[in-house]
Amino acid sequence: MKITIIGTGYVGLVTGACLAELGNDVFCVDVDSRKIDILNNGDVPIYEPGLKEIIERNRIAGRLIFSTDIRASVAHGDIQFIAVGTPPDEDGSADLQYVLTAARNIGKYQANFKIVVDKSTVPVGTADKVAAAITAELQARGKSDLEFAVVSNPEFLKEGAAVADFMRPDRIVIGTTQDESGHKAQHIMRTLYAPFIRNHDRMIMMDLRSAEFTKYAANAMLATRISFMNELANLADRLGADIELVRQGIGSDPRIGYSFLYAGTGYGGSCFPKDVQALIRTAHEHDHRLQVLTAVEQANEYQKRILIEKIYARLGRNLKGMKFAVWGLAFKPETDDMRAAPSRVIIRELLSQGASVCAYDPIAMNEARHAFASDMADESDWLNRLTYAEKPMHAVSAADALIIVTEWKAFRSPDFESLKAALRQPIIFDGRNLYDPVLCEDAGIEYFGIGRRKTK
Image (cartoon, rainbow, N blue to C red; front, top):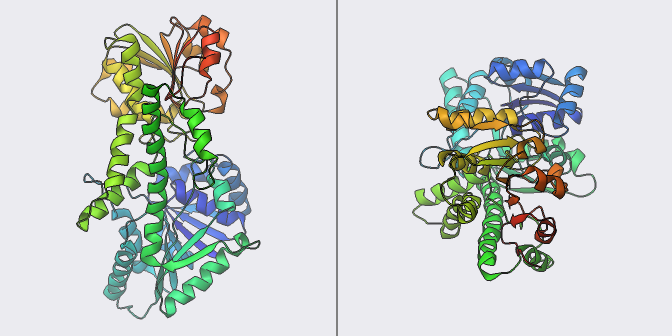
């Protein structure tokens, strides 16, 4: 099938590459010529395991094209996937300007029947706005007789496992209208996704608004689980309980399960913070308050500072002259995404209190440099006290404490004797509960986790 992907960000690249891998003819378009140049030169502007290899294989095979030519992109695809960004506005609502611009471009150049798929995460009711934008352009051209169908097909991709999630989905949500064009769109979308439903039907058909709501509801539920466990972990610290044992105890209940029950420094990334805010804002626009999600957001903002409070409790609030090693900068492992990463809150606070920081991340160093340069553009002295190490142990050398922020596999089994020898003060603040408190204590290292009991 001929497919156009509008937007070469995280969702667009994964969607386009994976559909090309299945034999489709995919045209990826973006207004950012820098991104397109990077892709046409064989590189990828984001890090996602396995993605670069799929893109290169299908680009060479001619099944995957990258271009800035909008007219050509509309002409190419019978199915037009809108996969552009929906960043949060100042009030927390999703900014739809890029989605609606993509819709207007389709209407401006459309010459035959098109299925327009909202792949971006968008508020409930966006499909109606997309349809109105396309219709207005067609009317302006005197082409009101041209038909199209708008489909909501939200993505459920985890950063760091997006390729696997796309190729082996647990569900494919398709929202359409219930008229003739909607039924036609259902048939075509079922044909497109046929390779994924050979063993059993993973497609869930519903109306447009329910499909749009499903995406927000899914992310809001996962964010709630994270904040819930963080709340319990903070209480466990006061009660002398071990949250890891509690996690095992409740996760064994099949009604609860183990996923998204790990205590830590809060969630970040491009989805959970933005989507929770957008859903709260949507409720506000309809004179309704989402009390649980409002608390989830507040708890998450508090949690990003939890390690800072533990550092202050142990070392005092005057950190001038101290050095801290930070392992992990990305908001989660297997990605270089620094958006809303807890490391940005933690490092900024340390620098503001006069400390120096030496940081290491296996993948996210370049993105981190850009993020911190933006965060502290007016604080040159702070930036001068932030350095980056080529190896984890280089960051630790002569540091007053090690801070774990991202749970990369490379950090899971350190040589504790070497750590103790390298640290000026043998202290670990573990924001991801990677280590056993008893093992650390046996090695002569003070250990501060999130809700972990420190004594044998």
